[in-house]
Image (tube, rainbow, N blue to C red; front, side, top):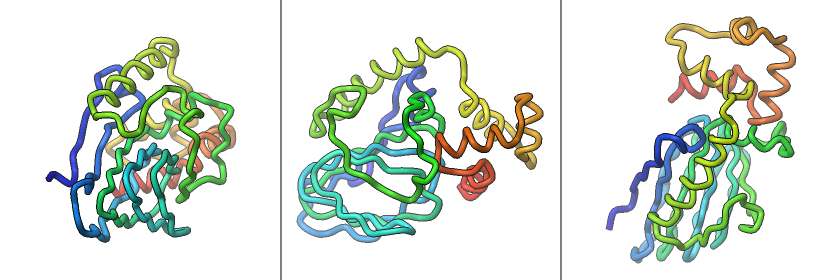
Length: 207
């Protein structure tokens, strides 16, 4: 059995989804302990099937039984324990993806995990679906989202500038490039991601 596997979305979907990965202990008979996950500037949707996983963030310990979970930006390493007969599939969303849904204010939401109703997702999916079905569903939804939002919003532009810089980048330089005040950029970025721009830059450097 392959515990860890990665699966890649198509080129249009890549604008919003980094990748999909699985931790599969579904046929295992023993607990897999202390799998280390480093912060990477992504949000995560987690589909847990079977028994449960245990996740230790810098804020709390979470017991995640079968269901769908939304994982905020992580600012520190996370430890994961996977119980026997359990599989978790992670959809890794880019930093700016949630900014496409402005009704969500994530200003004070970092290093945290919440269980959500699958009906709240903008796409319909069975959490125990085969990876091919999950990939097809995700590609179909985000292709449409990309087509209907050809213009990049400020959060996506901020992240694009940061990722394109080999040298030191500052909020001042970003605000100059986007011709927007530093304060407005900081507020927008914190609301959409839970992170300050400076913290996001630090996370990328850490990676």
